[in-house]
Image (cartoon, rainbow, N blue to C red):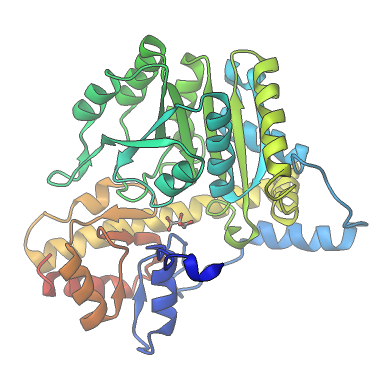
Length: 394
Ligand code: LMR
């Protein structure tokens, strides 16, 4: 049977992590996969997470099943984190999923089940897993214009012109904040116009918010999403605790559905649960239990929020450092975009030859397409990265 299989496609991010691990050079620098590292190059366990884990280990009395939707307290709290205070919150249902990729897949399956001829529009470029997940659910995937490689900002006019052509068959997949891979986010005016167009043209907005708290702050980063939710009748949200709780390996996320009515979103939730049962039955509990614990306990919540702010400030500090050192080393302002972008990533515009040379000559690993994980750098890496970039002709 298996000899009939084609050779598997390599995932561009995860295969890079393996290549980096296998590189024996001691001074190698991993700017590939989206994980936060501190000044010592370590992805830390947040203090709030550690404390919640200890409390859970002491207090938990059973490892019996939780339920198809996972931890409903978590579902409630995580929905509040993105939607609290909006009218749409009262028409919302949520399901805990294995990471945000699990949420993307469950929501893709939901769309395929509700409207099989759905076309999903993803940004050009987008998170490398968006297309495979949508296509795995049998959905047609199209790209909308997003990033202008010359100016390194969002080409909002071109994007909106595309959205003006869409209709009820279409779903627009947006990044809530900290766009992956470009780091270039939408302006408030663009969110406003997308909301108006979604109502006028009848397309469904689908927001992937995997980096809440890594841009301008926990509340600020969900502002565009909330603006949409206040305007449109229906919406989908995939959210993640990988980055903002540092729970990467615990696979903790949620699929959130806003319906025209609560009954509609509950029906959608029921369908997701049927599909989850036929896929993985129920999500792993540990990460969600930690998050629920943190969000319910005022002290832990405050600790977590200050740690998140500190991570956010450090990333923005690294961005300023890059701008400053690139200005000096290149005697130009052409790298100032590092200071304009938000979140973990920036797209640099390096071509595949330059990316290959960075790896071969300098031991610096970037994802294809030239994405840099700024949050993966230590301060001491900055001058090395700056010199290496200029050496390969950036
Ligand atoms: C990334 O884009 O590097 C992260 O979101 C990791 C992943 O799941 O691909």
